[in-house]
Length: 141
Image (cartoon, rainbow, N blue to C red):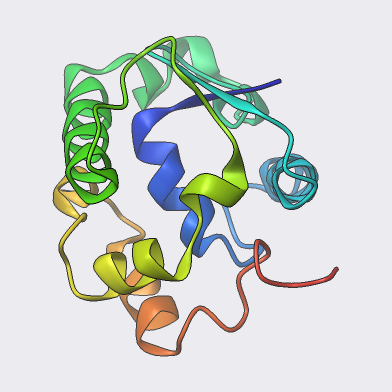
C-alpha cells in the first residue's frame, strides 16, 4: 500500500519526472509505476513515501504547518470533486482518483488551493495546459 499525504495526490497527477534531486525523481517514478498498477493508496497526515526521497526530510519543509495546510486544502478540494469526504486513514485506488475528471478540475483550477506557495506551480500549470501529455501516470514508461 502506498502511503501518501493529501497534496501529493495533486503532485502525482502532474509528475513528469522532475524533482528536488535525482534520488527523489527515481523514487517518485517508482511510486507512479505502483500507481499505474493500481496499488491501493492510504492517506496519511505526515511525511509519506514521496517525502522519504528527500534526504534531509527530518529538517525539511515536510513538517511545516503550511504543508499540513496544503494537505487539508487538497483533500477538501478532491473530496468536493469526488462527492464524498476523503480523509486521513482512507484508502483509495489510483484508478478511482486519477481520472480525466480530476485532470480537468486541476487544469481549470478547481482543485488547486493546496498548491498555494508551491515552487512547482508554474511547471504544473504548463503540464496541465499541455494536456498532461508527459506525466508518468499517463505514460507507459
